[in-house]
Image (cartoon, rainbow, N blue to C red; front, side):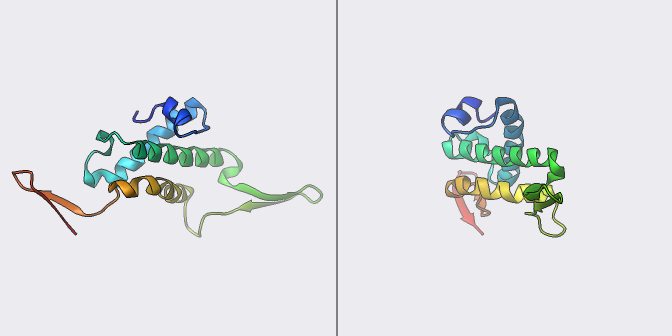
Length: 137
């Protein structure tokens, strides 16, 4: 676990219960590792911005898990009690799954923390035997 629950509560000021955070944090780590694997092991770095990205991704994941468990993934936009009419919020585009929407939201959440670190760069890094490195497109 890259981010401790105490960091999440005290530094990031998160509000998820510990059990929910632990599950969501694991998903967030896997998601961030998937985004950055081409650049190396992101979790070998000891940066608060990376921890914050994990926390942000965990909150997105936890939010969408809760949505899945209630109302079949739909959030109520309005409800009428007289004739019982319910309108649901629909963030998804046609053909988009809830999983795809969650990943899109997670990317937006982690991007603001990871972009300045260079971990989201798609430049290829090459090094010779003398550890002289160059970046190319």
